Length: 301
Image (tube, rainbow, N blue to C red):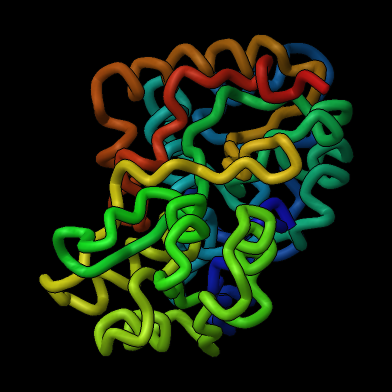
């Protein structure tokens, strides 16, 4: 998956109500044909003429998923929805696809855009053209209000042998902590996210860690004013590389005009502050904004 570094708990919510034919725009379809290139006109030109475009998604919360009544939503979908509307393309049809089949499906013209929050990587960029990133995700920590141990990084935890951090068993964060110098005896292994929050609340841990949106979601759910997210957390560098990932819409290589037009409208959302407003309902904060990073920079080997 795109987030091999992440510990998101993604809830599959596809219901039997999606198993119908002839879905209208803005709905999710299973195995529906889409985006076959007709002779004459680029993909962008045809989409503008028809007022509709077909997108591929992988049913993964919070990026792109179908609600029980068949509506297509998610951060990637809602960003694309606004961008495309402002490009003169008011409707989207969604094609549900396994994540590993998204790029092959795009190249086979089953759909015209991948709206799945897919991470931009040099390897994937050999096959598809990425728009500029719409979000970024890294690690995050929460502590007791006031941050009594002044923990702002994994390195800070490593430097304080008395500090303990709760982390889910099997999560990639365990590796990140170890490589940042945190000792095993400093880690409080828990089975799930709510248990991590409980460990922090009870004092068994001084901090908890998971990816940004996951942490924000559990804090929002806990509704505990005695806990706070460390907003100036310093991202760890593992094996010389930042663990932060960037997600974006993907297009066929030949659709450079589509990518350029999409990027132009996306940039307006970033500059106006609208992008954050679109992302927030899905658990994203200012910490998950992509900044000035571009797809071009991210695909460099």
